[in-house]
Image 1 (cartoon, rainbow, N blue to C red):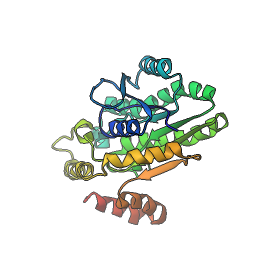
Image 2 (image 1 turned 90 degrees about the horizontal axis):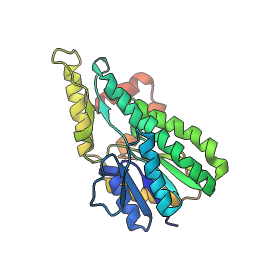
Image 3 (image 1 turned 90 degrees about the vertical axis):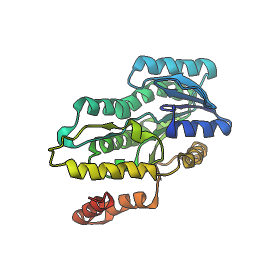
Image 4 (image 1 turned 30 degrees about the vertical axis):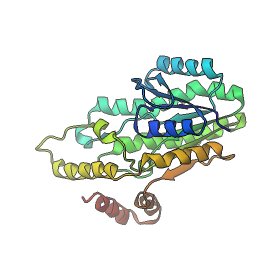
Length: 265
């Protein structure tokens, strides 16, 4: 049955695509972002996941208008790339504050209302990168791995109150994320310069040739309509999924060679 859905990070890309799809399917959708952008089919609200006050204001608006929140989709996030030796720590902190702490803030704010309803669903957007340490993307992989472990624990805490939670793990998705990724500059005399330049180009190319965001709407709808929600839903190209399987099956040295080969390093 269609219900009330709250999606963070819905100004563009994956979040907006899912929000538009669910709206077409009859759901009442509220999409949030730090800056409101009109033009979508769904109701937009201003929300900064780094601000508890902003989160509470947005949730209060939804509850005043709908009296309930049936589904929370935590999609707001930042991408970051950089050589560890040269990383900007403020950028690292910003990434964790958005991808991990921001997600936790929104869960904390929504859970009391779902618990009183006696039902609810939380879908946390993670990444296949949470399962695979990606070169020069260690911080991003770490934030998404934190989301995975947090969600696993959350499932056990909330099951007695009729609430379910899961992670949706996309591979590369063809969105505008390349233009918004945090990137720490690499000095010209850095010994990592050539390797980073080559791998960063491969990262950009993987997004340019990534999965279409439109494939995720039906996946999310299926999760919402499932009587039992699994821990993980992995959506990506066959090679991206294969990397996760290879990590479990191959010897470490062979697996790491495969990763370097994947990035042409």
